[in-house]
Amino acid sequence: MPACGKSTVGVILAKTVGMKFLDTDLLIQEREGALLQELINTKGNDYFKKVEEYVLRSVNIENAVVSTGGSAVYYPEAIHHFKKNGIIVYIKVPFETIESRLDNITTRGVTMAPGQTLKDLYDQRAPLYEANADLVVDADGLTVEQTIEKIIESIEQPC
Image (cartoon, rainbow, N blue to C red; front, side):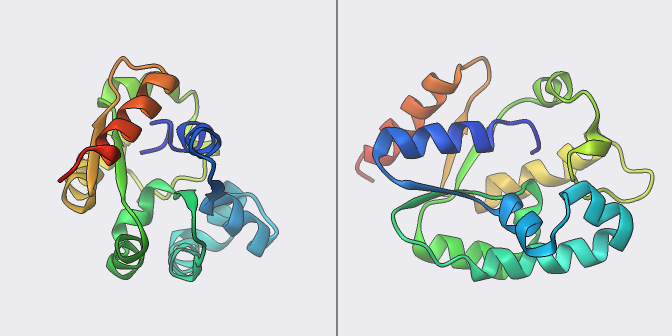
């Protein structure tokens, strides 16, 4: 979800474990020469989703932490691509936390259907995140550092 800490946790996690960091939202902006929200506003959700799926499926990087947009879960082939090459981590925080962190959802580059609320989006995506994650990290009430510790500990535990 937007505001769950993907980018913040991702970049610090990458530094902590000595990996590269890649944010696919930034790749989309670079490819399109526009901010995510500008892209959605000018070309629409359908166009944005096509570009996002293309970018996600094109990621070819090793030894990296990749932060995707929250809508990445809508693209089964992209999910398969990431699962084949790494571990998908869902940073789980309650809706109330997401809501409190977002001042204005309309500036974040989040694809939402007309009339869809943030709660609707959360209710739609949360089960998809759970179903597709290799690792679910409950980050409710945790600091960024505690979340990172939890991710590292969970990955290092034998199956």
